[in-house]
Image (cartoon, rainbow, N blue to C red; front, side, top):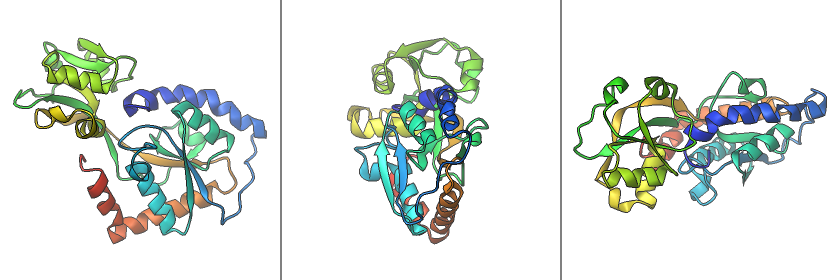
Length: 262
């Protein structure tokens, strides 16, 4: 999750299994509740533009989470950790919620998932402007030069198509290869691509474009603890605050301001 969530959130399933033993430390019993007026302790990882220690407000996912809890009268603290460590410390009870998680049946055993944040992780292709490459039929892309990032877990539909690919060290390197014409398509999260074009690859603005449709779209959540005694209360407060933000337009305003790629 330190770069594209396509990598670490899929790989995090194994991390969750590895840290699930942490709940056994408490003998399977819920951890004690905190005082109701204590700050809600949030943890996130470096996954710009969604979450990041150098981003305004910690990134759009953290901004929404903080605003929803504030709407419900809760204060927060926010820490950043590598993804596997964030999961470990969350399961251990050091934090009340993980900001920026994908929902799965496995995670629901230890995490509460209220309504999603309104953010979609869209994973698909960037291409050079004017290339006119259709991406709705993956099987039709067999003759194309497609760039991926080494070590990333890619969408199941993409893997099932068994397309020939060329590896890069990270998303930025992949986009640079695309800009130079060394590949024809780059597989990437749309938000990550837009963020990189705005911050580190200015020369690609207007030259590289997102291609519709995305291969997959996955909603992003803030997940709360099922093992802490007050996990249900905090999750309910968050859900109430998020619902109020949807009703009063604050959520739409935040997304418009900070998630313009959606």
